[in-house]
Figure (tube, rainbow, N blue to C red):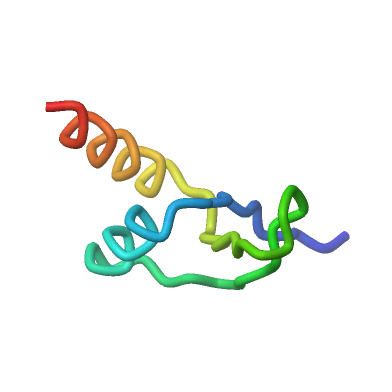
Length: 62
């Protein structure tokens, strides 16, 4: 039985850059299924990553 890494998909380049500046690494970049002109960025889905995304989004709203 293999454990697959759960991925968190980010479609925003600004959020991707912010996550990278916080020390998170992009695991994979793929073409968006919705529009192949765009890319999606895949990160390991962890509680810490989700907390960081929530923190980013709450700061953006201010």
